[in-house]
Length: 377
Image 1 (tube, one colour):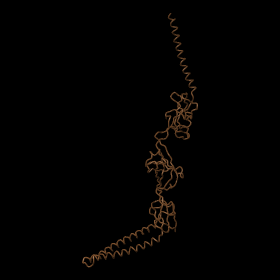
Image 2: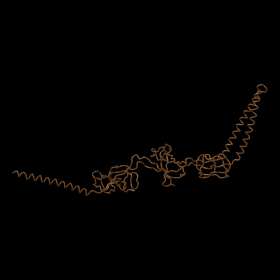
Image 3: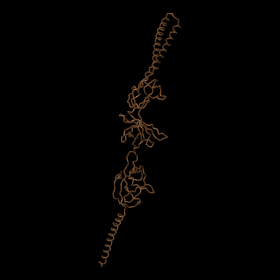
Image 4: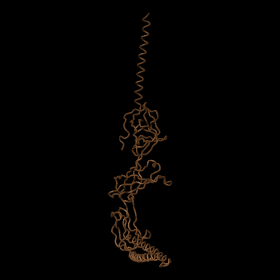
């Protein structure tokens, strides 16, 4: 009777063991089937962009100081001593003007001064004599007063004659045209024998033009969006069209500290040291300014972006090896790589070259993972 009870129990245990083994086999088979139907993909991770960005603004070089040189007296050019391209020092003689009228007027003024001084000497002696005579009542008071007034008049005459001489002597000094500061002669508009009129008006009034080129300056309009990062002392790079591949260090020295309401720009001055004179006024180029990027964008290969009706998307593999389509915001397009400013993180596993048929939840199998910049030019 005991055997009758044991045999059914053994059969039940055997059946349970067999059922458990079959269930395990079914799970393994299901896993293998799912793996065999998952789409194979390569994944990459996005790279972060540079911490700084660079803007390039058009620029034209100017001499730090530039001044036209005019004649201060009228006459004829006797001789000029410098030509274009020559370096000059402050006060160096550039040209000499013949002004015979000024010379004759100066001779006449000096003669008049000598005459006035002689009359003053006589008036002084006479006035002193009458001052002594009045003490003994030898002369009338009216005569004393007249001589005192004559002395004062002669003193005024001498002062006027002396002023005339000084003025004409200064006019004679102006016959020598000199450089206002150290620099280079960039223009010459006169020749020997030319008639010159004093002042800065009329045709041909400018004799020379002097430029100080040991330091160059550039005025650039910085867009309003970048103006808050501009400050005095900031270093920039300058590239010139005539000198390709060469960069020159410049420094921001000042700005208007006000936004132009018409152009929405900030006017900034950049100074560049030019001790060798290699940089020339009027040269065209670009000023490169590096600016900090507060939120560094992510860079992904252009082929990783899906352009569908829902907009640009990037396919990401989640922890369950399934596809998640993320809508992204595209920034700058660099050709092989594209800037992503929103929608993914640097830790996401991005499908490198996603096929168009990918949908959310689709199982995938990762074949290879790598850096987003590998294989990118």
